[in-house]
Length: 152
Image (cartoon, rainbow, N blue to C red; front, side, top):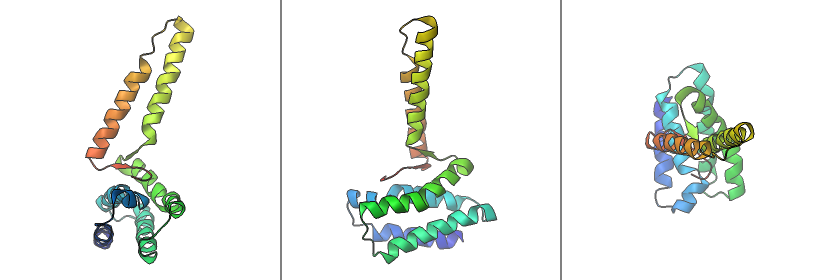
């Protein structure tokens, strides 16, 4: 199964090789590459089989559309195929998404307002600290190819 997925990923990358970066974003190019690599690194157990099939379905839909899709279709395919695969890999392979940094910012704002409310001091330091922690973790996951996002 992993060999078949590798072949499909290679076909996907070669088909989009000459497209511009903006066109590649319609196909969530970097996300698909990272997610397919993440799926390949998992064993062939039944819990991962469904998501590997989902990736095959995505590759086939893109191929059937002759690599011509609209932004609306792109978002629909992302929600139906890529997002569930990414959520599975977040749980099983340590992937991250762009929304993680917003969680850090939200927690920082809540902590800053809590400190202000209880101590009546203007120490808004938690938000920048947690932002930089989230940004650093995101940057590391991008380097490790364990990151996915819409239009990325």
